[in-house]
Image (cartoon, rainbow, N blue to C red; front, top):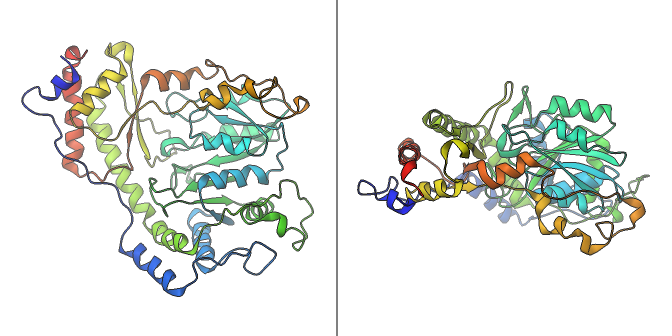
Length: 425
């Protein structure tokens, strides 16, 4: 029978109501924002060598709180995590034609932040169990032009930093950790992003904690911190008065986060541990409820790591199930399951990379002497491509606030679909 018929098998679908939206914002954030509005100081940044170059009191307080929470020397707030990635790449003295290795299984901004500086993203494949960048693929893609590795702690679990740091040291490379989805996750008792040269987190509205839009960079390198602060705030107008000798990439922007957002961030950071625990509790119940279903693999959490579950990642064995992912998802949705995602990302297959030849024989619109021919064809990242096309199924954990009854209903819906797989077309 069809997935629609499956939903009415026995009279009604499993879930008959809309789940409550996940919302970490409360009265504390409302009061904090109200105080800022009443103060009249909504921003205090000056884009020049000035006492207010680093922003107002709430910016500084939030950054100081982040330093303490994550155990780093420097935290730099920005108006989006995309802005943060642009500042991070620019701070590394990246030149046109330099290459940065980045996983294809990520949000597109990870790679476009590289292109922003006329550098070249080189796409690496991922580990099929953790969905993070595969160190073996990183090694394969290193060239004489490689300057950095951008790791992405996808879905809420850290990449294999021990191996990646070893690779970086052996090849004189920097590491940027994109932990947009993994604030509060740990790798060997250290927070994600804190063992890299530069890291950071997203404060976008659908993350664990948020300020509407925003992000925060973290680093223990004072030189890189200063360069990111300059890129954030009109570097070209400030470098002379600050006696900055290396002005490479000192093109500044308005990447500044305001006082209202930072006042909200202060309160959100206080809640992060509790909010993570709530996602982990839901994930544990889902794992326990689904782990016995044939052809379905629940998330693998590597030893000495913690997972904060921005997404609950599932891998399907389509050969065993003998059904397409699409038909299974249709059946689950017909049963009322909300928050499912089919596939994730293969950003090397986006039109801007597939059609790059239109911009010049060499791929991108700059002089051929700076670049080499980079392969962006389908097939270069077979693990990520198969997961995206056929076998990956995600449950978005920061969409809804689930109670125990709803978690059990989701599990029941999966079990009902699995029990009726032979009836799904």
